Image (cartoon, rainbow, N blue to C red; front, top):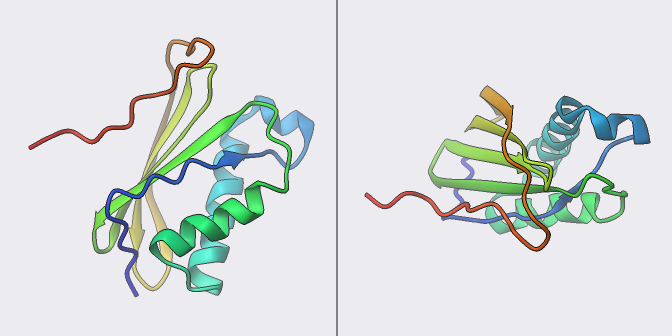
Length: 127
């Protein structure tokens, strides 16, 4: 079963399990991956349904750091995950989406903070 998301932007608020976790973005990543696995592997949701499933979970939990998720994949079996917040913290992951969801690699860094009302450009590069 493949996840096929044709430039699907899944901008959903992400949360922490507890207030302390808000200062640890790697905990945010773990929560996002767990929710994504639950929706993808257990509930067998793909594409827009996967985004909706994840959104339903995250909308119920506070998001004090205002994290956003961008999920993109237009090649079967491959997806990219971007998690970011206004403070400039970003996590980029490459995922394999076959029978199970596998995180191939993640890179995280802190960029320049975004100004109020500004958002991160997530437009894919043109070939």
